[in-house]
Length: 147
Image (cartoon, rainbow, N blue to C red):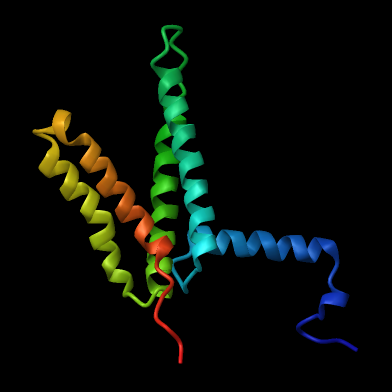
């Protein structure tokens, strides 16, 4: 008996692993569909790890020994931004907002930084709080009630 969609008992552990990896890549890199709160927070964890990797590469490039790993940092930052934008758009879609509203959540920190750059010494706690709120809001919103 051959079917197109194997039942769970027909799947091998390798098939399950391949499906899990495929799902993970879709969550991190695809702009299609929506994701729940837990997937959003786990994806943000991936973004933070990538940004720490970029920070470590920049730090080693600035070391007195002259180790030049800064070529790794730029692709890590680009990858983190891609993943972050995909996560944010999918989370907003799942929460009942339009994907275009990503511009509000991504542009908000830029406006906060640009407006506060002159008074950075005095306003950095407020700017940091604003950035954290704009990043956390989509992960906290449960979405519209289903009737």
